[in-house]
Amino acid sequence: QVQLVESGGGLVQAGGSLRLSCAASGRTFSSYAMGWFRQAPGKEREFVAAIRRGAGSTYYADSVKGRFTISRDNAKNTLYLQMDSLKPEDTAVYYCAARQGSGNYYYTDSYEYWGQGTQVTVSS
Image 1 (cartoon, rainbow, N blue to C red):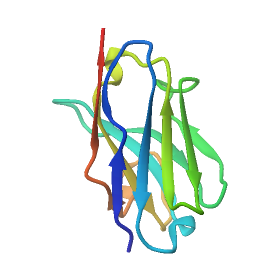
Image 2 (tube, helix red, strand yellow):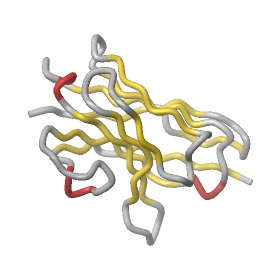
Image 3 (cartoon, one colour):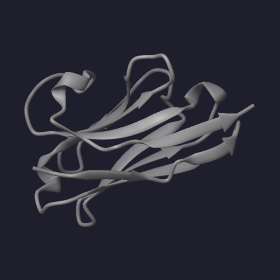
């Protein structure tokens, strides 16, 4: 089992940057594939980015490709999301998630563990 705690959210102007962190408990962080999702008011939770186990491959939603970067530091049990060139439509609660099983990285149902979320607000 793993517990996830996000941090780094806040208020930023359009065009600005934020770096989200997700600290994971336990000693098996490297065995989990990880993802970032977001949920805006009145909308469903949507995929943002994912990274495979180890130093693995990365995947991005089209809406953030070229602006966001997902990375992980297995020695620190931490997942990151560097967000650049932020837009007002990026405003949402951002969640990190972990999975050990198979399944498409794009779907929320593929992930067994979730953090509590961190609010990101981008003003125009």
